[in-house]
Image (cartoon, rainbow, N blue to C red):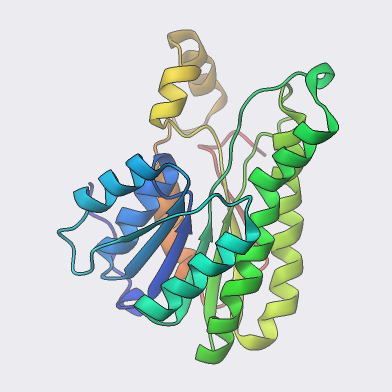
Length: 255
């Protein structure tokens, strides 16, 4: 991993990352470990989660992986409470988990629509509702939500996903107002097209890359660490005056 800035205010803090077993989430997990944080991550991919935990066990604190299907709010609550008991009061929550599966408008059923909301939006609120109690007791905290620029670009073929992701930006601002009185900051990092292994496997082609590079001001494809770095900033005291912000990281596509 490339050398990154050090944030002394993050040292020894307890951090939770949802969807942390792969992709952007896994990179966020490692970046917090580099800051000497106590990191726990939730994911329904049991094998990937265990592998990542073993891979990253050389940092000051070994990451804690907990299996959790985030659609199950009862299990989510139990998992977060266990992490608080095991690692200490939660200072930072990164709501990252999502599924950008493509779907045609005519194929969407009521059940599928509800599932998209459950996978991409609902757990953001409930994880925040549970974790902020620790932050309130500590007198400070940070919640960082991961959004998407897909809905801003009028991207089609996944209305359930884009609807949920647009709502995260509204949720961020609402929670920032409600939790600011407890010195808890809530911000949203909004990724552009980030090249994870999933993106490489499913959608990245030479033609698609060429088009994307032409759209961006920065003439390279963005990688997961391009998201993890601003997440660290918004979690740290270096952003102590920042809340209710939706910060776009897309290489300069949106204007």
